[in-house]
Length: 348
Image (cartoon, rainbow, N blue to C red; front, side):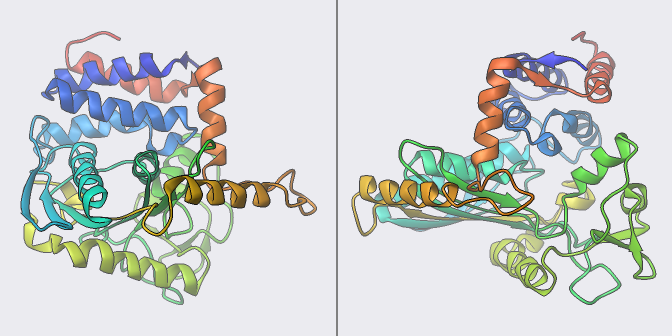
């Protein structure tokens, strides 16, 4: 298994995307985000996606040199179109706009439409926290054409993974950042399980008859469906995410026949930001947040657990370890990058 630095992965992805038609800024933005995911230990949202992005560019679903723009805005809100650029570019632009508005007005809401895969939502929570912001990110619309997730108690799919992220700054320590799909797992984890020849744990998917299933291939080939996490609670949160992402943004009205592909054509992303110093100095909030984190970590672990952690701890540890020791890249993933590069006339 190759061991790469973040810089090496970033460079490889930049070169591939540039050869596929991306301009320097767009290629750099996507490459940074993907390599950062692998550095953070989140391989599901890392460089394994590059061959798929190149395929989407060739199909005309992604316009690799396009730039986002503002459709409408007020002092505290905005609707942004990605103009079918990379999702990372569109969402990054929308988040930066939301940060600027919240910085001057205390809070903001920015929706993004006409964009492709935006990657790891936790990255946006981390960026907002670094700017002294509490953030919520809601992304949905992926199941409009090809639903993969059943509502609680159902046997047929209606929605999709509908991920959410929430973050808050915490002073000297890493921010608290939660980021997860409202389904039992993200589809990318099924991809990894299939690549590794593993079954999924019971209770994550059901087959077309509504019976428990464990084969990730069934899910990826459309013969099984994802369950919501946490039963009825996850199912309700999945619906809330659909309302706050796709419905609030009005993304259905911005769908175009040739763009976005099956999964991203109706995607709507909503950023809700609040300045952490709205009601007290920022230092007071972050100190309190840090104290809360330390209280959580100080709780004695239950039998079967080594420790109690705060959301974001594991990613921060992975970044520290992999910055020092390198990022392990599965052989199949590196081979797919090499093959994609060669198809574009470059050598990694």
